[in-house]
Length: 138
Image (cartoon, rainbow, N blue to C red; front, side):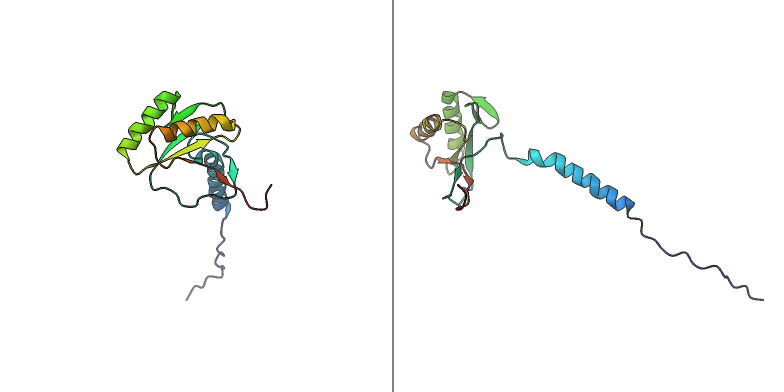
């Protein structure tokens, strides 16, 4: 006598709850990390329509924050100490360009003074970092 099973096989179900949990955790992680992805100190850059698209291979970055303080390699320095530190860095990397990253809220005269000091101290190719503004924006 042969026994036959009259029970039907259970149908497979896809449980999406673990997938949703993982996606939500990743979303939260990206939301927490995204603000800290900005390079360097937080500075609101001035806008320009004509921007030089070629970027230097090596750069020495000097940062002027909104309160007028000068920073080089995450260290706050006075102007004379900054010039010495930039000269030393430029001696190590002679082909490096000096980039001044100044906050847009700073008075133009102060930014120009630091820019001129960097230029007069023997640095070649000093440039100002800006953000790109589209042609239609005012």
